[in-house]
Length: 315
View 1: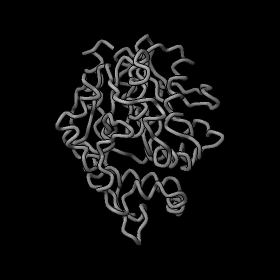
View 2: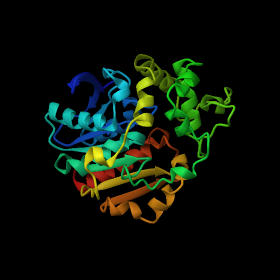
View 3: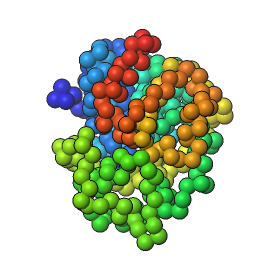
C-alpha cells in the first residue's frame, strides 16, 4: 500500500486523482463503483503490479480526491467515459485492460465497444455487460421502496444520509450491500433505517478501511455520487450503440451471494449465456460465498482470477 503513488491529472476541465503502482507497457486501469473510490482496488493493484503490470486506479470526477465538476447536476455517464479516454491520452497510454466494478463496469464495457483500439482486455466485477436501452433487468418487477428508486428521488437520499455523519453512512452502506437480499424500505422507512446500529462491519472490512473511505467522502461529499450512478442519463443514443459487440478478451467475476443476482432477469442473462451475444469472448467466474464487494472480501481469489486472465491472453 505504501508503494502506491498519488497525483492529480488534468482531464476535461477537472483534476482527477490517480493512484498508481508498477511500471511497464502493460497497463491495467481500475474503475470503482459506489460507495467506493480508488481504495477499493488496493489489493488488486499490488497483485497486478507484482506480475509486471502498471496498475492505475482513479477517483471518478466528483468522488474522493478528484475535483467536483462545475455543474454536477448535469453530469452523465458519458462524462465518465470521456474522462477515461482522455486520461489514457494524457498519460500517453495507447491500450489498457479496463477493470470496472458496480457502476464502474459501465465505462469499462462501453469504451471497448466505442474505442476497441484502446482496450486490450475487459474485466467487470459484480455487473455484466448490459446494453443501456435494452437492459436484461426487469425493473418493473422490483418492489416499491427499492433502494435505487429511493436514491433517484432528488433530495430524499440527501435528507436520509444527512441525519448521520459520513462515516456512519459508509458503514451502513457496506453492511447493507454486503448482504444477499434486495434492499427495500417500507413506506415509513428510509434506506439508512434498514441497518441496525448494533450490526458489526463485515469481518473483511476493518475500521481502518472504513476510516479511509470516510476521509475521502468527507472531502467530496455524497451529492455527486447520487447524481452518478443513480440520477444521470444512460442511453444508447448518447453512445451510438445499436448492437454492440466487444471483441476484446473479457472476464466477469461474480459473487454467488451478490444481491445483484436477485435483480429480476440478471441470473437468467448470465446462466443462459445471453450476455455472450454482446461479449463473445467472455469467461464467467462465480465465487461461492462472494458478495457485492467480492474484490475486498476475497482479494486473493479475485487477484488470482485477474492475473491468470492477464497471463492467459498475454495482456
